[in-house]
Image (cartoon, rainbow, N blue to C red; front, side, top):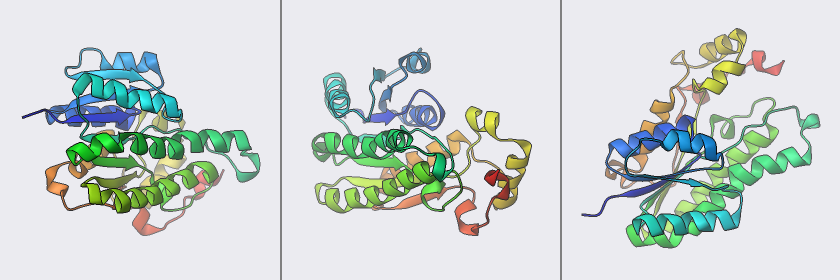
Length: 250
């Protein structure tokens, strides 16, 4: 039996790296993709059955090369995790068009380009796709006009992809993480912001990168074989409450 092969974009750190670990533990061969070659090399060092590829998912030619490199290495593709993303926050009046385009190019265009380029290979294996959106795509918040809009678009794109690719046996789902305790988040979130998040999240805590990765692992597993076109908010109940965060308005 051939090994399952997965691509994880944005794999050098955070949720992408945690997802690489979860899929590897389940016996998959993983293609780790990131545009930060140095961080990617460090993340891939010492890992077995991984291929590290430095590509920018917002570049159509780079995405095509990513698929070619994967097939040259493994001969097949079963799973695609579209995790690569950028987060640039700011008020509407201070978000210039260059910022808007940078966010859309990676967060939205990248998901479109990767799925499109991978479709033929995924059709051959009855593949699975998970797109990573955000709780910011489900509920509006201040300072997220570009980021939140890009992630809302990823949610709709997921449904479009599921509707069209289902006839080829390809399942496409979306995970919308809530606040996650990443190194970056902990570096920029003030004690006031952390308290506000805890107050607004029913589970009263941030999630972990591993918890998001486990949700992704479920969606690409046979246990989710009849699940497609769905959005799972892995957010501790944050989206369900609809409570605002005044601390984030400053």
